[in-house]
Image 1 (tube, protein in one colour):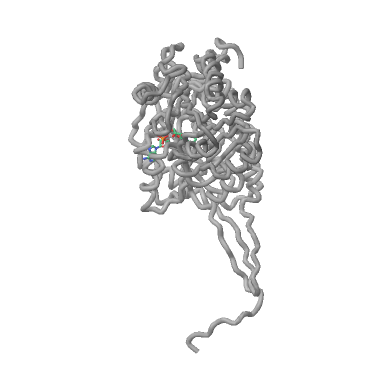
Image 2 (cartoon, helix red, strand yellow):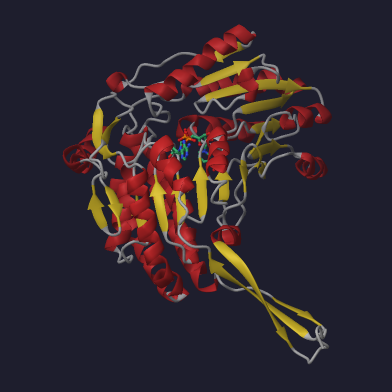
Length: 505
Ligand code: NAD
């Protein structure tokens, strides 16, 4: 990326179309306003000024989109996997070609620093390539033999699905949910988050331009309680892939009950990083800092609880504090920025409220703990470290979803494990130790869907992604995604003339 001023000019250029024309829905291949003409404003986290006017879809728009997805389903599902593979690679190529535009728009819409967003756009392309390559074998199954019988399993796409995404890294997450659905042969309705809807529009346009048949991918913008709810209740929608807060997941489960929706939930986290005295402490400190202060801490897999062996606690937290103090807060398009403004004043208020909660609970604010100055005067929050916390404090139990880390000491392995597991969430955990036997023992007992040992979160796309407890239901990645978007069918062939019971003579 170029210098800051250059970035600003380019971003303005990319944003002009949104400022002038707003963001419409895309239903059955047509760009359309909301049926009742309703709109809402999306604002920039940098200066809180309007960025674009967005279509505010409701139940009627969702109904149209679901019907379009239903009508497009038979043909799309019947298309040979090789053809779907080609199309999905074309989408990936177009994402790469427009990576800068996507990254700049995403940065301005979310407040995420451009240094991370340029990679997020490319990760989106990788997601498409990964699932494109698996499209031809998505239906493959097993052959299970019994005496006199051969069973053959196969998988069929489940039907039109709904995808509901959050605001934190919307482009990457949308590709992560949508690419496997398309590769499996499903059609879809996507409802992006109201706080950051711009790149979802770019993405669906890219797909249309790549030649995706009309109706296969429909985009309906709007609020969760309106468009989102209607999508989860629609009888033509067979499954909901949802990424967002745990309590929204629980609402969606209720809303989908009448139509027996299959659900896949990627929810919140309060993920521990556990550091033993025998670890490589320099690397552990860098990884801890990266996992909580990158992406503004608005990251489901962030290491928001730091559990440190008592003998090194003070030295280690001092190291983390030094690094946290030096982190640059600034404009998201400034190449030097690490932490940009948080998504929205509503979320900023929530994050800031935890500074008072920490004081009231008797924790120490070792670093940060206040709003930060930044260009445009937007939702800037200083990278923060709480020390002297206890696991029963709200700052140790609740997902803050900002650049805020809560540190606690532990005396021994048993206490570390008890603290790590004593939360409602179970998305990720990060373990730092040089004792391989302890690592095996400890990871066995940790309650988390994904654990990294001596590493920050480094994704390998074929591995399963998802959480336990209140962090989610189901797994994404590799074949696990197909299991969600497809139904497994078994066909039993008689291979011998077995005795059939004769009833009625
Ligand atoms: P959110 O739950 O408020 O909103 C997510 C989406 O759900 C939005 O599109 C919203 O409009 C929609 N929604 C809200 N209410 C709805 C309803 N009743 N019915 C249907 N849809 C509804 O989440 P958020 O604040 O946008 O995102 C932050 C949360 O997402 C955090 O908790 C974070 O941990 C989580 N997250 C999880 C993962 C993961 O992979 N586990 C990844 C990213 C974010």
